[in-house]
Image 1 (tube, rainbow, N blue to C red):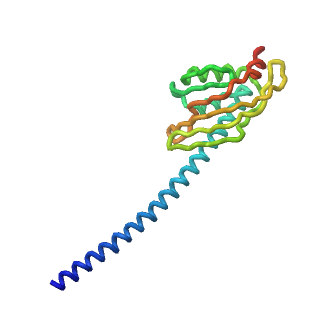
Image 2 (tube, one colour):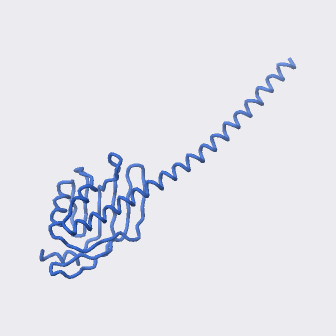
Image 3 (spheres, helix red, strand yellow):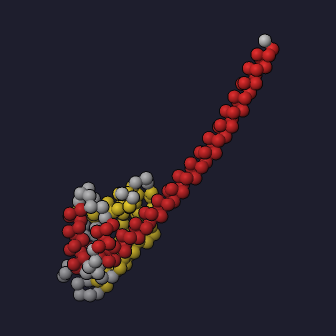
Length: 181
């Protein structure tokens, strides 16, 4: 009886020790999982910033009449939306791309940049919020200052961040400037 009690005690003690070692490994693993998650978020934020930078490079190319970068960056889904500085809402790639063709044909010139950017990174959806600043050219060739808030929403498609929504404040000064075009 004493011997079985001793064996039972040793088994319980061994179980407790092994259980606590297992728990320590789980806690260590949890710390690693948190680190990996934070690293993944950081990488995704960098990817979104790169996609956002590509948007502003594409806008500047569009101001010269070049639509290729814009066409490459946007999703071609019929669910995308664009609410640009001229007002209204465009839904679907067909409507958005037709508007871009009109805007590219205007050759507004100038440049625009994204300032004071904030990034939110999700698993397959993320967005940036910023102030768009720069200038375009009026119908008579004079510079027109541009400064408005913008939101850009990206969706991960086939491993690439594609733009699915762009929205800015209305820009009466820009709308007046292009009235003659």
